[in-house]
Structure formats: C-alpha cells, structure tokens
Amino acid sequence: MSSERLLAIANLLLPEVLILYFDLTKHEVKGEEIHFYFTELNTPPDDFKGIKLHSKGFFPEASVQDFPIRGKQVFLHITRRRWLNGATGKVVTRDWDLVAKGTRITSEFAAFLKDIYK
Image (cartoon, rainbow, N blue to C red; front, side, top):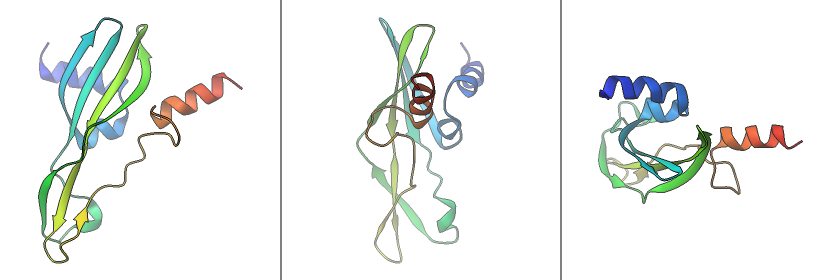
C-alpha cells in the first residue's frame, strides 16, 4: 500500500494530533493487535517562534491503547521530541494531552468508554 493511501486511512482512524505533529514510522499486526509507531516531527512549538531551538533527542517511547479496529486492539507507540533553548539552556517540549489521566488509553477512547458505561 502506498504511503499516501496509508496516510489517508490513518487520517480517518487515528487522533488528529498524531497526524499533524507526528510521523507514522511503522505499523504492525500481531495476532489480534495492531501497533502504530509515531515519532514527533522536528517542528518546535509555536510558543517558541523566533527563538533558536536545537533538537536534542527524544523521550522514551510511550504506549497507549486506542479504539479497537475491526475487533483488534490498537496500540499507539509515541516517541516525543525535546529541544534545547540555546539562550536559556532549558529543555523545551510540547504539552500533549494524549493520555487520559490515570489510564494508559487515549483521552478520546476514555471519553467514549465513559459514555457507553453510564
């Protein structure tokens, strides 16, 4: 499958924030599980426009569960980037709200489960 077609399908199924700010680097089907691997793009946060930032590697990969697809469990493996502010020497990151508090599932999936189990 071409990368354009895969991206079109990903746009329909995955959280928008992952499509906009991350590169889908790999996907795997392992039995009854689908795994998507994302790496944050080297695009510094908007709050730091005009400030010289240097990419300084990545945080450890985080894995979260998302909506099932065709009866298979879906896991998102997310690698976030960090930058160094050359002027202050401080590490800069984006503040992501991808994971629902107290869980290892996406916020959207948590909201969905909350609604169906009322």
